[in-house]
Image (cartoon, rainbow, N blue to C red; front, side, top):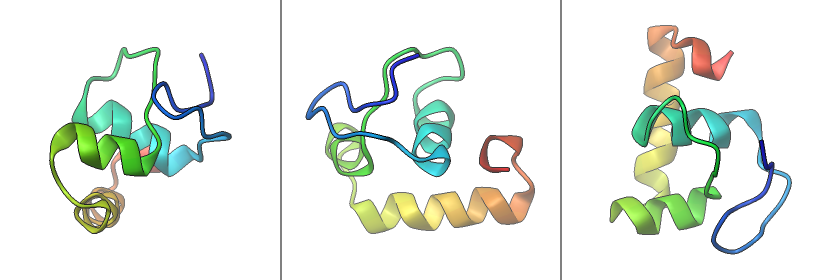
Length: 65
């Protein structure tokens, strides 16, 4: 698994960023986006993704533990 952004090359990606990639794109992905590139890819804001990360954490999602 590559631990850098597939688009801009930013590294290292933290566990929350990897978790939100898996949650929003699919659990079996091999390439990840940094939070900024993921927001652009999903046509949303970085704050939207950060809010979703907090929601998923509160729900007990295991991708964010």
